[in-house]
Image (cartoon, rainbow, N blue to C red; front, top):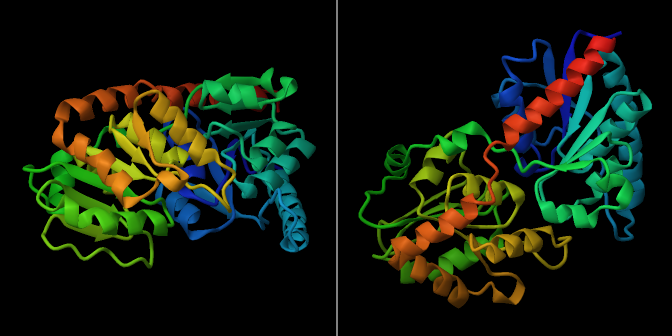
Length: 369
């Protein structure tokens, strides 16, 4: 039995699997008069973000999906099965008009359960190449929504036939940040360019070490705002041109607005939010073991368009980072040209267009119940 008109979202594991979904929900509010809920794994980063947005959150068991052989796969297979049955029970009760998946391994059991119950599934992929969860969800999804044109080449013909390229949804606040508020929060004046370092919601040791190595060379040339990740020690600079903090919350839009250059990983969240805010980027993509190469692909695409410098693999050295930053610090014109190139990829109407698509399909399903 349904608790009323409902649209369900699922996804998690990192902020990159949550914030684009929240951007779509922003556009649905005020138009959809039923419930909007989120089904996630219960990780603090996703639960906190969803609940801060005022969205009901439901946790289901989830197991990590791996392409490689691992003894942990057996234990995680039981978690995935438990997640499927928990999702089946939850979706039977909620009976949503549509399930929208933002990917991540937690999304697979809800998508499988929704398909078993005849609930339409839309799945969205933020990266250039689809992750394993998206590949599984695609088999049962009614619609695949892609961020990049290049992603079409990664899909089999059956999936390509139901795919549409619409971009990656970005929260409205990102484009509405106030640079003066951001500088005030950081404690920086406007005499020097601001470099914003983003290591992702969990932080990134490699990025932190590179920043620490180049910081002395940046003294007197730029201010550095550094998101270190939880538990990481901030750098100890020789001057007052540095501020380190574990994570940016409500301050993020203003701090991005204050930034003249963004340095960070090449996850879809960092790439698309920086592009939407018209910021030049120096990207240090996660690569090697533990990565499927998606960040390297994201960074390469941005670099080929002129919106970023990519320091991938062996190229991620202190000398290379400094060589990428110094011309941008020295030239506002160079920063502006790179920012325009990044913004050209941003698709600012993506969140609204995807919300329209969701609203149309959910209304059709709901009207048939």
